[in-house]
Image (cartoon, rainbow, N blue to C red; front, side):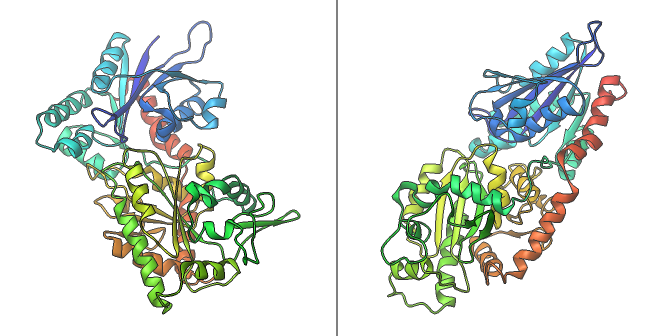
Length: 468
């Protein structure tokens, strides 16, 4: 049978060369036994932390009607849609790093198959973060990527900027396939929010015995007349239930979500500084006396008092090497109106959290300046407006003053918090306007449509040998 190999390069770093690849093979014809054509998707890394690879596998199974074998590292669970699809089969192992492109090319030659690459970022630029661009290993990796990249029979990439770079400096013609969220990323209903916050209640209200503006009301301290002990069946920090009706609490904290890899290429310190600035600027705007004890302020909030500016709860999701360092820094901040929670969510709860939040923050900066953060795509899929760190091609995704804003410093981000959350929850027009823009973005762009329009025609051409 004629086959083609499918190789995808993705942006998350591996332990050694800071690059991941997925690759596989798809039969171009049906065999005499009428078996379905087959694709092998090889992921260098954790499949549960590789959403685009999962979406490709789902599209190959659903839209191209292929049997799909995913070969990947063990670790976090993939989406339920992956596990429940009878045409997708998951195999755990540890694929090699640098040789993967060469191995896929060699395999495609042996099997008389074609070879397609989806460029997410350049591995040599990721490696350069730790070694420097001038290091000999980085130069060798650059040559390796470029040499074997040119051998592909077709290429996809994630931005127009990367398409231009590949054409001008690598001699590679690529089709842009923008990341898009799948259909199960959507704005959460009030009932979905209530169920989620009840499930996360302990992590939000009692994490590590923290006492702050969020945990205070949930601890049932004496004198708190509106909420004593959190009743998980009828109310959460954000929501309540009366009979079959669900509602959002008017004095709830504003929920800000950020997803991070806790690695040096994301400056999480910017968010901490912005949070401190927000805390101080709100106190100044409300002419608060520094002598007022934190507990007195929290008691007022607990008893239903509303202020012009709300408490902010930052929920930070993700795993990575610098997580513990920043958690220790958070404990020392001593903030009045800001609280942080770190957690790792299941593949099903993560989109619900995004769909329940008020604002997203993205700290991603591209090592090459040519890729876009998948986390922002996910946020827009849930109708969540975003504040993102500015870099060269980010405006291909974040449309300023339509679905988000850009910032270059902690002070700018703090200014955006002040602007968005003034009058929260009912009188924050700037935030509502961006939410409408994010909802419009998510309503017009979905992964299955983008894949059908841009990826499937290229794959069909590669299979048929029309593109060489």
